[in-house]
Length: 159
Image (cartoon, rainbow, N blue to C red; front, side, top):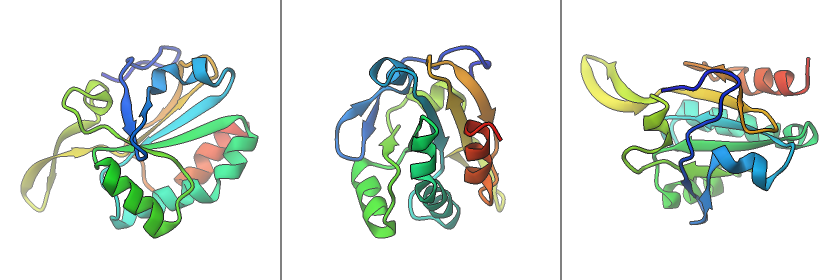
């Protein structure tokens, strides 16, 4: 389940769009003092997910200037991520969490959902900010896309 602010994430690795590996819980060790924004989203190339990734991409340089890295996470494959990045000119890195028991499962973000009377498994759109020591600083649950990236940026810039 979701760690409380002040606690670390589970130590679970993800596959990047380029086929490499990234472990958000170890970001602070590889990038000392830099914060990390993880935005979990349902699917590549859907209207809300595209808008969210584009919003974070548009603010990428400002996040970097504020000492904060970005990582978008869904259960889509690395190939789908590469196509999503290319199709929309995204500048944020993306990672896949497709394995059963992965990070989104451990955090309780991959859940049963309902739409139009149908039940299915899906990602709950959530953003997590990790501090420079790798601990959860803030969680935005059940995110609404419009204005969200700007809200997260305001938090990391101390506004």
